[in-house]
Length: 490
Ligand SMILES: C[S@@+](CC[C@H](N)C(=O)[O-])C[C@H]1O[C@@H](n2cnc3c(N)ncnc32)[C@H](O)[C@@H]1O
Ligand code: SF4
Image: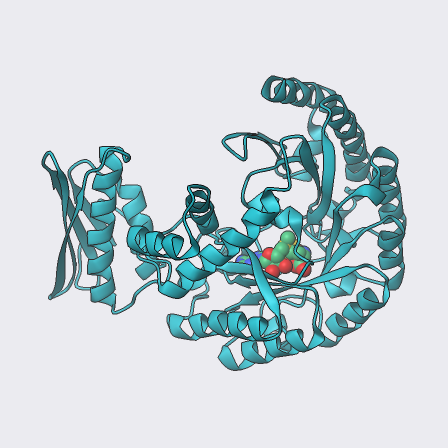
């Protein structure tokens, strides 16, 4: 695709908009234009009061041309208003050209609820939030309502936490094998899995240091989240060892929530669940992704639907309070028929939490690297699956409680967590809205210090891969983290 701009505009954001309509587009200045090359031209100009934009989209003989203007206002920097005018003009041209209206309008960011929360804290009612999101970002009414509803739910939770509260994320970046759609850093080969003991002992040391730092800062630990990879890749002894260490560092009985993500059915057994329960874990994930064996096989997810049901049954009998199930909508090989049957069966199973992700073509996933045509070009089918999920969960008494979007998600659609009343995962809300300090340990972990409800944020990154993490001088890293934490909070 070719994007030509004239005037003071950021073409990177305009490229992102083009990709909502042409998901596989690559942008180049040197590409020769053929009759199959979409060409977008965006021009902006301004006078004292108004930003004007003109956008055309052409392919072969066909052209659509649109104009849009936005008045400058004192509260908004002029360059933002110019950018909005350009984005809307281009969006209108692309919609007409492709005969497709993306449901989230010109909103390409990861956290749509943040915008809604900002508006709520300015004192807007739900109706005003919906109206404002629709006007500013051209959202479908149902998406603006979803964002507003989730933001209102989250705001009630967020207000219970102060800058003295924090959470802990423990990273287990290992999996028994790699699913073709996944790009999470996770070690799967025998050689790399053999690093687990060394990794756990380094991470246990990091947990001890983190516990000491939290104490030193006078903070209170509200939740723990053990995520992956697949945390239930650990064997029983490793799991017992890790959770005992966590118990010796924190009063886990006093936590508001303790999630052990577990994950894949083929790694879960009754003994691992017992260990989790005995160490005060309150929430565990058992993730089918799809309840269609052909889809699971197609994406190289190495367990069957039966294995999922068996693992779920063990979790339900384990005495752990809450179970979450992750699903992915739009996996290659899935369609409305197979997906609707998946979500119907999950609702019948009635876990406390259901997290419905929209398939995202991750850059480093096997599917994307292999260049497979993973997207269905018919977003209507996908959108129907997303809508059906929201309707069927609502009818079964679930509440949408947190939401985010991923880059390159099919149809630019959202990921939503649903919960039965009173079972929301607090960690997910606090983490997603960036209003809470999260200490994170292990490879790929990102510690996030926050103050004043997210007004001030500082991130500290651990190395991405376990072997890099193990190669670090950990003592030096603890010292640096402690200095940064004191400089931020003291
Ligand atoms: C840390 S991952 C996986 C947890 C665990 N390893 C499992 O697979 O059950 C969390 C969730 O992200 C979602 N996910 C992973 N890759 C995805 C993709 N390419 N598109 C959409 N969702 C994805 C899956 O639903 C997955 O359960
Ligand atoms: S989806 Fe889960 S099990 Fe599959 S590779 Fe990714 S993290 Fe591992």
